[in-house]
Image (tube, rainbow, N blue to C red; front, side):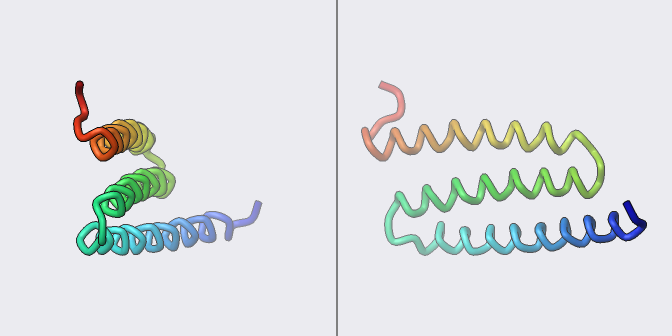
Length: 96
């Protein structure tokens, strides 16, 4: 290992944060201008996944494990929300 490794890692994490943030903006556009409701649901799910990725990247950047826990909770909530919306789109109701 050399002295440049932390600098390269930090640069890569910053680049990934910029990329994932840009993807969130693009997905936000699809949520607003989506032609159909399923397109909007998929875009919202992608935003949730990108927010989890941002939390993990931020945890790597700062060295705090709390953000990993936050990302796991966000992933679970996002999964449950996606299942509920998919059930609503297919059946018309969430709870029978």
